[in-house]
Amino acid sequence: MESIVERVKSLCEEHGEMEALKKIDSFVALNRAIEPKKGRDYVELIIYGFLEGILTTLRIKVKDEEGRKKIEKLLSEVKTRRKELDEKFKKSGENL
Image (cartoon, rainbow, N blue to C red; front, side, top):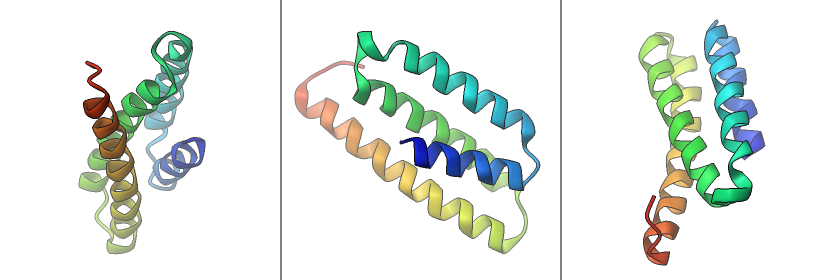
């Protein structure tokens, strides 16, 4: 999880989205604080959803083909992991 968060932050920095870096740090810290109560998988699911939104927005803003390819690749990873966690919760019958 931390690796993906760092890669998203790196892409944001690479494309001058400095405000996004602060938002990511704040969001991750806030959700990590509720991890003992809600559980690690729940918190990771929420964070992956947030990162998916950040990457989707970044993809819209970035115009160069190489940058978009990097974003698309990471976005695909994030979506896959989020969907896996979402399925896990659906199977266990937990309500988010």
